[in-house]
Figure 1 (tube, helix red, strand yellow):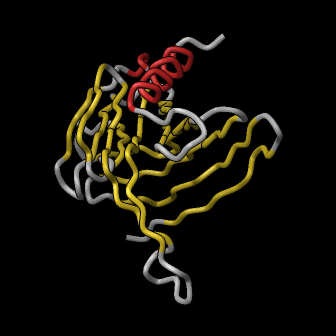
Figure 2 (cartoon, rainbow, N blue to C red):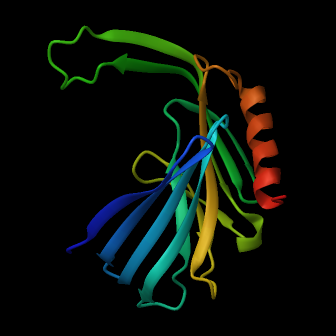
Length: 186
């Protein structure tokens, strides 16, 4: 009804940057929640991570769980899903730039051979995959609430016009390697 948001830069350095996003007074119709999300971008990596921490978690039902998800890529033609990892692959994706509301700009249209998005929830949270058909299709994970009131995930994207990970196989290998490192930090 009256959700508020704020953001702060926590770290802005050459090796990593962290942004804190707060969601306050989130009334879902099934409970009251507040949440802090620490998004971290890393130098020389093609992924970012997030640590989500609930400051208020007051669900109206015992079965309510944490969750995160991503929208299926446009023109999704394949999906990899195993454990806490999901990759949505798109083929022949039409992009237009600039957006229709940017007046005075010359429109450029291209067809990408490959585009993909990935989401990885740490194994220790025992994420359960769930496909949600609404809003164009979403790859989601349910995560049981825990004593720390938090969970962590990694997200990544790639496309055929990028510097690296320009194909389905390259990107899948990159994401699965990043997932192993994410689940087993040094």
